Length: 239
Length: 265
Image (cartoon, rainbow over all chains, first blue to last red; front, side, top):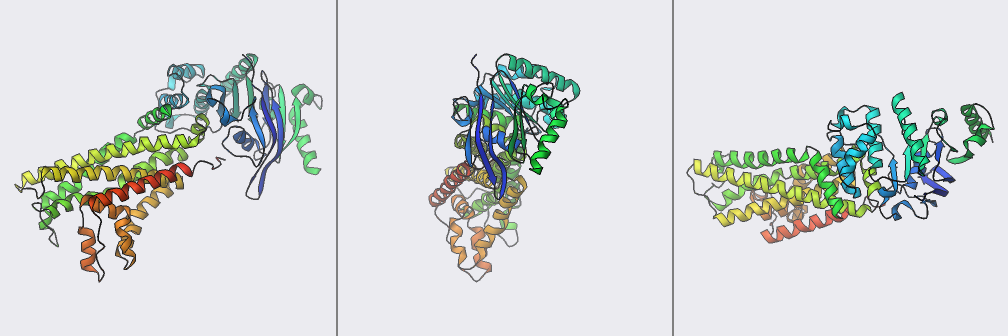
């Protein structure tokens, strides 16, 4: 399958007087896992929401291959996204939730049980979401993203609240996904958590990309990536 | 478009809203009309026309018009649930053409409102006929006339649901939207009805149009009797229906247009 690169070019967004991001530019290539790292409030979510067409940028563009998200023929066939972990109606079961989004996206109903099995939700699928733990909600969010069997995954802080077994499972899953030619853009506010997983690193701080390159190049700056990250962000603040 | 409608139907029936709506429809239809019919409007204080007059039938059915905030709330809860539980982002991810999502929701919720209206009208009709039979009072309207009034009630419920959806789409916050709905129907509209001069608009408000559709003039007549102001002349049934449909159209445009370009940050 041909890969779909994510191209982000000069994104700028202000909310009122507050500048959320400024000139954010990076590329997340197919077949790779790109980590989008920054402190809370650094602009990760805004960037990802613009990429997914939920927020309109003041300047710049964000594309999957040649197309903006909303110009994709059937977006959920190409891109699976996790943007909000709490997003589910508490009185629904996971099956009801997944059936809703399978129907909205035009995906066959068999996908509901397939993605539930894939994400380890099958034992809880007929339970109401009200009783779900954070980790189970995480799996549900990921299962929803996978309904269209996408080639690109955009995941905003997907490992928040996952138990250690869940994190290991997600790492294995994402590695296999990328090795099969898929594109993964994954954000986190802790570099350490993704250190083992990511191939590319995009560091964002105060709305600007301050470093962008492969993990091995970042490793040349120091052994401890977390220390390198803190160093890079603090020099930016001083400068 | 078809899959959006199907998705919204699946979503709706995956929640308990349809079941609660059915319970509310039966309770609202049977209770108010049933109780008032059993007691008899002529036995109330002050006495009102009895069931054997068209006015009396209008009163016991029209009292149901005062419960139309229920379908409005159903519409509001249905749409604001998406914001409250933050699923609207996931929905717009699957269907970035937001206008179509909103049209599908309006259609599905509008049909839910119509179903509510049909159930509540049937319950009210049964309660009224049952009470009249128990009291051995002949009804003051013919069966076709009664049918017409009940159809009007069902239609009004559908329109109120759509108005509720529009208010929900505008306010987004569930509690705020519920407050707006209740505030409008219980405070603002009655206030407009009794304000001298301003009350000329009453026939054109949703409540006034519903009163026309249900041939329910008791409220406005009572106001005129109590206050030194002219009774607002309510419209004909068809006029009321036209006004209500215009409100539904306006509400639909509002519900579809406003979420279109808003950032989901």
